Structure formats: structure tokens, C-alpha cells
Image 1: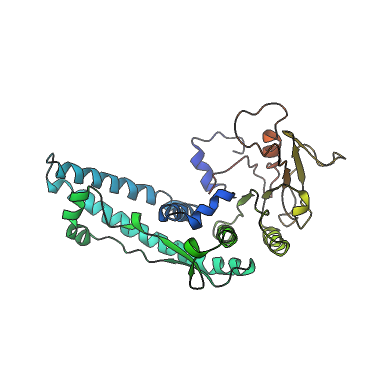
Image 2 (image 1 turned 90 degrees about the vertical axis):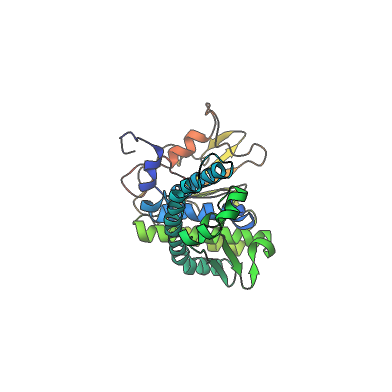
Length: 322
């Protein structure tokens, strides 16, 4: 980055925040609790990078305690060997519950606002995690020994997303679940810009296909001036505003407009408020190729070269996704 080699891709997290919408991200709403826990833990890492490793450290402590439980249950060690890991689980579990509670508090109001703008009324997110303590873990030690797992802690919690009295996981339509994910993404984008001083890169794949014209316009107006946004659509007419650049992809090839005025690399943009940073069209027959070997004629290099156009002096190649 900026001409210097990176020791690890994770270094990009402190420089570039990338938020991604794809149709399979609806699992954040309609999937099980583990998906939502993982999502909000990633949000924590983006909003508070110093605590990005907290969920991983807690998971490692739980795994070590589970291993100690199984060894003690099998007679290979004593119960005393479990105690250090019980303390570690209690300490890290308390920190993780506190961090998740903060994240939900940061996001809740903005999430409700963005959902309302998109036509999803009275949207709320709720987290009621109880931090584990050494005493509560010790109180259920016999059950944990019998099962070989730690049965208490934030690794079993859930974040509930609702619209009015309805749990959107069980009683939300496909369209409402899509709006919920978009509201989460837009709320986080606003928080990142506020807390970290730069707007995230938004990658929105097939985001317009199930939105009516009114919601498409709301989404477009919300991302205007918020940094770089790349949107894929099967038809250019699906975009309710003129994009800063349009790249059409058909038969495995990416081409700019017929007059060629938008081809090749762009110099850094002079204003972050010049509109949608990118738009491109995907052929319904050939699909959008974003992975695998990049051969001559495939759109991959050209599209990612276009991301070099940014609103700061840094050149951004890519960033960790959500």
C-alpha cells in the first residue's frame, strides 16, 4: 500500500474498511445466532480495531476449557486443570459481552433511521447477553463435564432484529430481510465515517434487483458523497442516478461507454461528493467473474484498476470485506 509492502493482509483493516452486500448476506438476518454473532463481532473489529481480536481470544479460551472438560471427564486430568480456563473464559466473556453491548448501542439509532428510510418501520436490534462469572461457570461444572462443552457464555448469545413486534428472522419477508441487511450496512458505514474519519468502500452486488424504484432512489441518495461505492446490476437503467463511471460486462469482457471517454485508469477524484463512485453492468448469461485466474479479456483487472480512483492521496487496491 502506498508503495510499501504489507506484512499481512490484516494490516489493511487499520487503513481500509470495506463493506459488502451480496444476496447471501441475508443469512445475517435469516440464519442462526452464530451468523449474527460473527457479523457483529466483525463490526466491532471495524469500529474499534483495538478490540478486533477479542472474539477470537474468547473462542480460543472456550476451546481450551472444553478440552480440559473432556480430559477431566475421561479421567486423564483433575478438575483443578479446568479452573485456569474457567477464569479466562469469565474474564474474556465479560469483555466480549460489554463490547457487543457497546456495538449494538452505537448502531441501534442509525439502524432504525436507515430502516425507516427504506420503508421498514420500527426496526430494532436487541442484545441481552449475560457475562459469565467464575461462580456461574463453577455452578454448572457437573453438566459441562457430562457434555464436554461450556454451556454458558457469549458464544451462545444472539442479537435479535425486529420490526415492531415481529422477529425478522422468523416472520420477516425476503424483501424485509434484504432491507434489514442494507440498513445495517448503511448504519455501519455512517459510524465508520464518523469514528474513523474516512468513509468505507461499499461493494453492493445485485442490490437493486428486488428493490422498487422508490427504495432504489433512497439507497442511491444515501450513498451519494459517502466515498466510493461499486454497484452491480443486470441493467444500467436500474440505477436511478447517473454513475460516475459505467463499466459494461458482456461475454466475459468489460468495456466502457462507446465513445471511450471513460476507459483506463482515472486520476484521483477531486471530491467525495461527486456521486456514485462506480457502476457496472453484469451480463445475465455470462455472469460476473470476480475470482479465479485472470486471463486476458476478463473484467477482473480492469474493474479493480478502477478502484484506484479514490478521494484521498492513497491508492486503494482492495480491503478486508465484512
